[in-house]
Image 1 (spheres, rainbow, N blue to C red):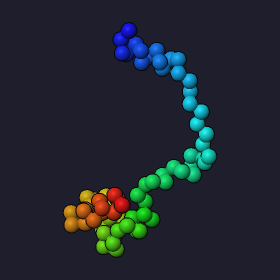
Image 2 (cartoon, rainbow, N blue to C red):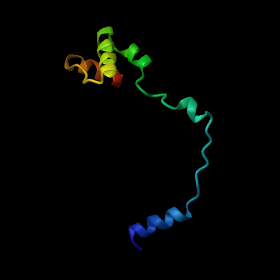
Image 3 (cartoon, one colour):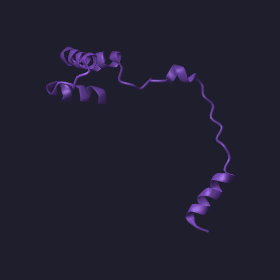
Length: 75
């Protein structure tokens, strides 16, 4: 048998995993997202103001603040 046929055969005979969720999806949705609250926490005042003004004006992020904002997102 080919590798592809074996994979399809294994899929058809496998059983569904039983996953128990402890929380509602709405409670955890967006939990690990860079929000305004987290931006305020990880960015300097100058970088935060630059980011929010860029978002409100639908403009590109100022190049001088770009590295600082990127580092804040990674943190």
